Image (tube, helix red, strand yellow):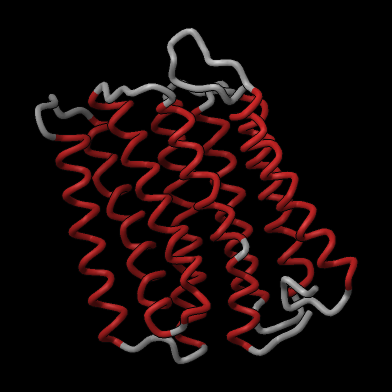
Length: 251
């Protein structure tokens, strides 16, 4: 059975294998991990990082397989975005020696989202999926959602700091991705998984922001963040398959 628009079975096996490895580390870490002392998660750090690393591998496999097609530019930007997202994961873990890991993580994820946005907008423009009605209406709705989420989750009742204000453009950037992805999905149902992924990314980061800035807590909050964030990234990475189908390309 062909799950992706891939002619060579070995390519499909590699792409499917990377997805399975991602799922094993993410969901296996949750199912078989031990709850930490704070009660925030069961997933060990290493399984979370390994799941993101598997998606980095998958993203670059998509690029390698599509680089000589009209979808190569899209796949390259998605791979760059996922790589920057993994860097953000390492900052927030925190596994990299930086003075401000939260700010560094926001910066890495922000750059990654810029790469995602450029990928989506460029692809939409190149394939006549840029009707102004769906694009701008979806973008406006999601920007309102992002701004409201930042106010109620991060800002309200808090003393503003540099990190609080840095979270505002970041929230709007994530909302912009959800808006552009929704605009694409309204014009081609093939991009519905991408739109779901972008929405899950925003949801995950609003929960994370509530934990970081407003003291939000509920049992296994850290796992909930990753169980929304991980699938979000996977849906974005594997949206290359949707792009191939829209472009009518088999690799």
